[in-house]
Amino acid sequence: MTAVANAEVRVTDLTPRPITCWEFRRAATGVQVCPFRRDYRRRIPAAAAAWLLAVLASLALAGRASSAPVQWPVSEGGNGHFYEHVNPQRTPSITWTEARDDAAAHTFMGVAGHLATVTSEAERTYLFNQFSVRPSSSQVWIGGVQAPGVTTPTAGWSWVTGEPWDYTAWVAGEPNDWFANERYLSMLTYLQAGSVAGAWNDNDIRGIASAYLVEYAVAPEPGSAAALAVAAGMMLTRRAGGARPRRAQRQ
Image (tube, rainbow, N blue to C red; front, side):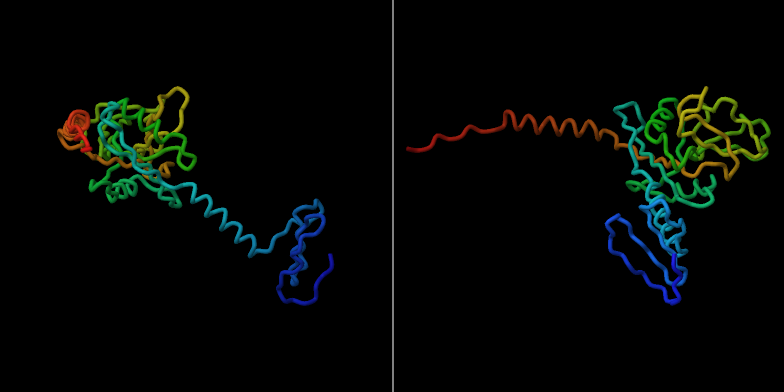
């Protein structure tokens, strides 16, 4: 490879060759890159490398978009609430208290959110089926927290909403308070051997969760479903029996 005396930076010779090889020469270094030949020098200018890293980073962030809220329908045994998976794309990962505050700042259909409270097997199963296997977050924060100063790992837990703590779904061997300050609840978004789907783990405030689940307690208005059914029935009745016969045309 011939060194170039002129220090001016320029890009030349961008015409495809018969061997489908693009050559990039930088006058200051004499670097030649030919990605279609085995004898090329694997060296890329710093500016090009920075640009490539920026593109890859933007693609990675684009793949971590939060999901739209989904409803657990009453007709399917649900509570009618909406749930949302949020990945704030923070480095380092979001803390439980930050997730709690972020969730409270979210609104949907005029209702403020909160970290999801998983109070039954049916709700846990529904959430796992909706939000499992998220490559960007193997665990998500949910709204359970242990009171300060409690030394028994299984004692002193409560939900951020004040709902009764009468259902649990811990990973096998958890909670264990491994670091003596694991007071914050996360849910696994993958299947753990020996545990139920969507099982729980106790974490310290930083933990390993990089995302969180928001719950919106949007309840249907009382009687709204019945009113819609009656209205639909009236419309069908009018269409079926309310049509008047056409008058005979005069000759």
